[in-house]
Length: 640
Image (cartoon, rainbow, N blue to C red; front, side, top):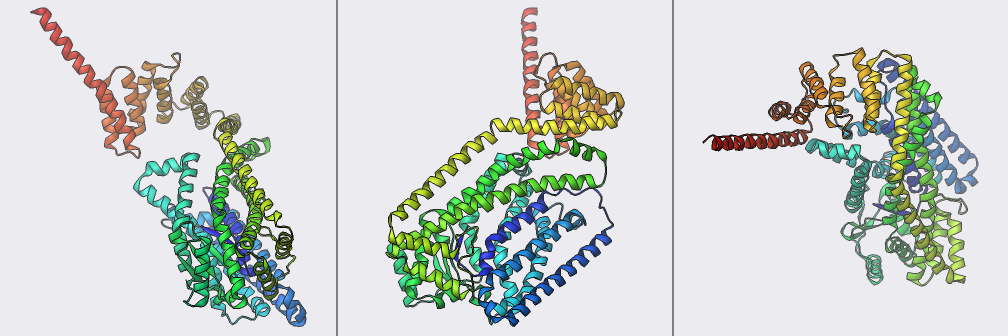
C-alpha cells in the first residue's frame, strides 16, 4: 500500500488528485450498463471518437504552447508558474474525463469493447480495454505539456522519458484494480460459486476486497519499486547514517531506494509497504542533491512518523469504510430517486435514451459520494496525518529545523507558492508556521497527537455504527426501496401493456422474493392466463405451491400438475428440480430421484445444490423401501 508522499514536485503532487480522477473513470466505466443496441453504427462511433480525440490533442497543444510563450515573454513568471502549470494539466485531465464520459454514454465505447473477443468473458480484459482510452487521452496531455515543463524546470529529461515516467507513476494507481479483476477471473474459472457469492452478497464482496487490499498492501510495494525503476541507495556515509538513524528509531524496512522517475528530477521522498520485508524507503536523487545530511535525516524521520503512527493502516480502513458505506448509501438514494414519477415514466417509455439517463443516475450518485468522501473526509485526515508526521520528525531529531528548511528549499526550487492550499496536505507555508508554533510551545505536539487519536476513534465508532445499520435495519429499508422501485416500474408497464405476460410474471417474482405469496400467486396466474404454456411461469408457481411455509399456500397436488407440465415443455435443470420437489412433497420419492438424476446429468452450474437435492430424495426413498420391507416381514410373521 502506497503511503503519502510528503515532499513533492508538481508531477508527484498530482498523483493524489489523479487517484480521484482514475477512480472516477473506473466507476464511470464499471457502472455504465450499455443498451442492447448502439445508438449509432459502429463506424460512426469510431470516427466520432477519433475526431474528438484529435480535437482534444490540438486543443491541449495550443493551450500549452500559449503558456510557453507567456513564460518566454515574462521570465519573472517562471519562478511562480509551477501552480499554473499544474492547473493546466489538471484542467486538461478533467476535460479528458468529460471526453471519456461522452465516449461511454454517447458513442457506445463500452458496447464496442464488448464486441472484442474475451472482453465479455474476462473482467480483466474488459477493464484493461476500458481504461486504455483514458490513458491515451492522458498521454496526449503529457505529450503536450512537456514543452512547458521544460520551460519551467529546464530539465535535461527527454520527451520519451517524461511521458514514460508519467505512465509508470500513474500505472501504480491502475495496476491494483487490474490485479483484482484478474483474481476475480481466476476465481470464476476455478469456482463459480465463490465468484457468485462475492458478486451477489455485499458483505462477502467487501470482505473479499478487504482481504485483497491487505495482500496488495503487503506484496505490491515490491512490484511498485520495479515499476518505478528504483535502485538501492549506494553504500556510503549517507546510507550508513540513515541506517543507523532508522535502527536507533526502531524503524525496520527492506531497503532504502533511490527513486529515479523523471530522470531523478522529482523532489520527493516516501515510504511504501505494510510488511517489514516489503517496506521500502524512497528518496529521489534531486532531493539528495538539494538537502544536506541533517535535512535528509529529518525527511526520513518524517517517513518514520507515518509508519509509527499507523497512517497507512488507517488509509486502508478509510477505503474499506467507503466500500462499506458507499454501497448502501448510494444504492438506497438511487432507488429512492429512480422511484420518482419522472424516472419511472422515462424507464417505461421504451425510448433509446432511457437507458442512458438511468445509467447516468446510477453512475453519478456513487461518484458524488466518492468525491465527497475522499475529497473532504479522507483529505481532512490526510492533512492531519501529515502534520503529525512533521511533529514526529521534530521529536525524533530534537529539532524542527531540518523539516522547516527542507520545506523552504522545496518551495523555492520547485517553483511552488508556499501559501498555496492543498487538499491532501496542508500547504508548505501552513506546515512551516505550525512547526514554528510547536517549537515555541511544545505542548501543541501532544495536543495534536491527542486530536488525531480522537479523530480516528470517532471515525471508527461512526463507521461501525453506520455499517451495522446499513446491513441490519437499513438492509430492510434498502430492500423496500428496491422493491418499491421495481413494483412501480412493473405496474406502469402493466398499465401500458396489460396483456403482456412478462410483466405479470416479473411482478409475481418481486412479490415472491418479498414473501408476499398471495400477490405472487395472483400475478403468476394472470401470466398463465395470457400464456398457459410458459414453462417458467408454470415452474415458479409450482415451486411456490411446493415450498410455501404457510399451510394455506402449500398445495402439493397443484404443484405436481404444474411442475409436470413445465418439465414436459422444457426439461431444464431448475425445472426438473421443481418437479423433484413437487414429487417429494407428494410422497413420490422414486419420481423425485429420477427427476434430479436427470437434472444432474445435464451438468448444471450449481451442481452441488442439485446433488444435495438428489441425496435428500434418495434418503427418503431408502427409508420408504426399508419401511416396506419391514412391513412385508411383519405381514409374513402374522400369516405364519
